[in-house]
Length: 145
Picture 1 (cartoon, helix red, strand yellow):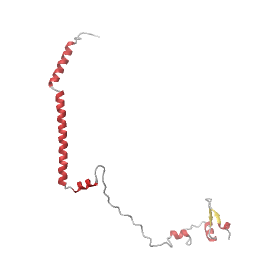
Picture 2 (cartoon, helix red, strand yellow):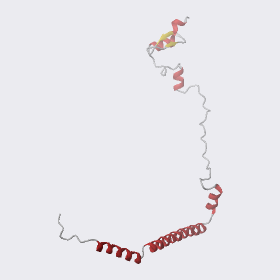
Picture 3 (cartoon, rainbow, N blue to C red):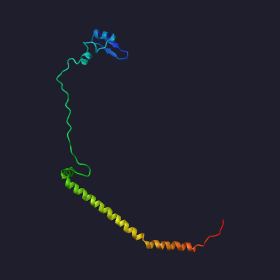
Picture 4 (cartoon, rainbow, N blue to C red):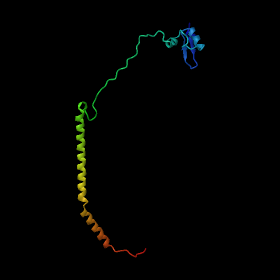
């Protein structure tokens, strides 16, 4: 048997080498190799000759992992978690109280500076100046343009 007898060029331009006349003739008759019982493709499709012992791969279980967050170490986080709710509530109220006191002090400081600059005496002086300016100007009555 010679190789040139077992070679066939397909429509896609590939050259196919066949093992024997039987397989070459099946190809030339355009038989589907998945439907012919003795072909490799049929045996793969029908799962012939494969081992049944192969079990599925086990998926790894996800593990919980704790780590620190930016600005707080893991020890700080765990300590806060282990605190009793009453202690945590008292701390929160204390922080809120201190924030309110700061705001109150800020408002008072702002009000006191406003009082210094904006008193009745200053306003009265400004009124006198404005009245004096209006009196010194000559009246423009009866002037027509």
